[in-house]
Length: 428
Ligand code: S3P
Image (tube, rainbow, N blue to C red):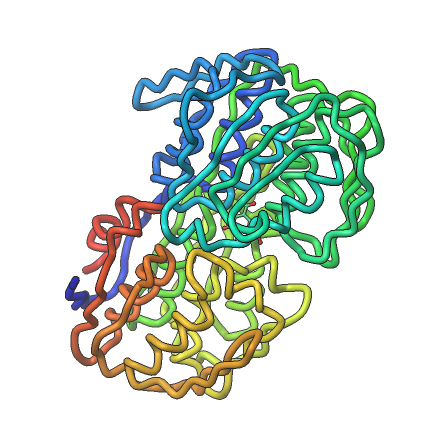
């Protein structure tokens, strides 16, 4: 049980750790590339290190000198792994790597921790089977461990994805590198587009037409490049909200990714009356980046968060729920049923914890409503083994009357190993 009793306003400048989605993809695409890639500012969190380890086990020569990662790509075809690949807590690793393994003419098994083994894999298994791979898993192929017997070449696919999921889209695009046939994915709402962007940087022909993404003629990755990974807006979000709710705060978060598929939280902050500005917008390694300055904001108002914005802020909803407790009125979150199959059932985790702290909150199937301007009493909460739930409630302790006790905060290492020391650094 961890006792959180942080007090003080937040001041100063911080570069939060690098983007998780881009760090994963830099290893994956760098590994199947014909050339050498240097990754600067790679995120050394548990999830991304699991991806790195998996590609080493798949025969890729990857050097890590503690500062840069150098990947000597082996081209598209990898080596059959000697053992089960353990993806830990990482949904992105298991789902994207499955796409690459579907095109390998060998046998592999992918597993993860007890949380990952409960997350649905049929969303990728179904299209990968259409493409010709054999994918087996627990409960009729739905859950890890997954067994993959790949095939080369795979069949093409024109897939209408029932979900706005970058993991599903990316899995299919990566499998699509192993066929010359038509490969097209259409989403109901646009999800993050880092895979499309990075494939282009590696020289692959990718066509984006509204909600559809297709692969073109060239599907060989051939590049000698440096990838500089920007700071993760999903990690910055904890401090943006902290600064907005703690009187006297004023912080600058450096090098934050501002890819429009990721900035839903900034739109919500604006609507809720958070006082912030973006300084020095620029482009780094094909992604928009900027510094974000956030001030304490005393006049927060509630808002409705639903529809197309959901995929653009899906990972930030836990910390947005803390912001909502301090806003005048009812903040309603709807159309967010995907939260139920994240690292924890995040609707349940958020509602359970907020209730324990004395907040007026009501659960729906696909979201919840928070009645704001509430005092946060303090009390016991659970992280449910979910990094973003743990960090959100550590931030809540900044404004709680009594301590907040959290059962397990080790899960934070999944995305942000130095979260506590960075928080202490900003506190005055
Ligand atoms: C991710 C996509 C999102 C997000 C996850 C990372 C990615 O998941 O929640 O944390 O890197 O592609 P879905 O694509 O399943 O929505």
